[in-house]
Image 1 (cartoon, protein in one colour):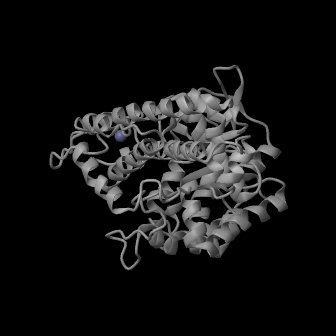
Image 2 (cartoon, rainbow, N blue to C red; image 1 turned 45 degrees about the vertical axis):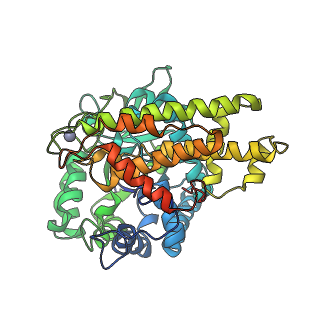
Image 3 (cartoon, rainbow, N blue to C red; image 1 turned 135 degrees about the horizontal axis):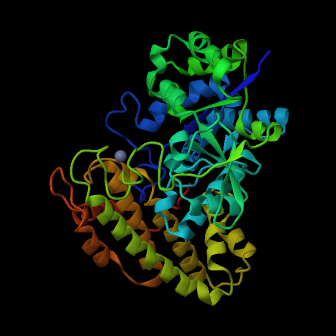
Length: 473
Ligand SMILES: [Zn+2]
């Protein structure tokens, strides 16, 4: 008879990669052979086999908005299996087993408050669009946390998130959950990931001798000493992509082996219905699960990556200045419309989801009578706001050097935003952006962000028109 509980949470995520001026074209990436790109490779190694085995109906998981969109178009069978696994779970237990995620996997504590709110709300909209119901939990990108972000989650109606044990002050008693007090006086629930056992699976799963052996050797002794609830959380790609074939470990563990040693398999939403929070706890703000140096990996650089990281704050400053320009230009136009400009911006994510047509969107916003040129202008600006959000995706800042694909994609998204605003309002920010980007310098070869901008301007020129392709996410 089970007297303990186990939940395995998988964070399944890929960023939007490629040229934002030719969305929809198949991306070809070096190193992914025999597949055309990494999404196809990782789908074959991880998403498809896990879906095939039914693992998405056994585990807790989050499916990032950009990956969900890619799967829907490029691997519809896998996508359908993932969504229906969650829906079946919900039908069985009265609560779903998937969590939402901020739309662009942005490091929330490094965002301005309004951007935090937009990322959270867009993430929830993506979730509801795909799974057909509201999310109760939200995964924080890189588990990067501060109280202001938790407050945004709370204000958006989210009940819980997951943090690593090292992000919590004091000793923890298993997964919890724990109350965390928010600046407003409200409280947010946090589940604590068991860092040791999570890392054991994330990094050494192939040397554990299979799920049965791991359950007997590791879980069995925990029954004597461990609190009620063990939470493992890792990248979903652990199971099949980082470690080929280990989707079977996950399946055997959750389907048979955990239960056979006295650990009932559960998920976070289910646990929340069946158990009370164990205590109130404080968090270590400005920390993440994947870097020991606060949030420096994405802000100022840290020793996780070799070399000079001064390009990171310089690139972020260029983005921040650009974001201010895009926002203010949008507000200038939106002010004349007699509506809440940021509510409209949030709502416009339905256009990116393909959930509504331009005409219907304008009609529902009470803007059906807008002259055609004004309507086009507004839609272009809303699309510019989308790309200006997307440039901040965490991977733009994650790696060691500026001269890599990820910062290029960030700059290309920024440029697309600039050109859309230019098209809408006959103004230009390219020169100011280039000036800021000169300060971001590759430590590998001295290339500057300005040179990368000139490179991606050729992408824009090669595509028909800056506003030609509609964005989807
Ligand atoms: Zn670090």
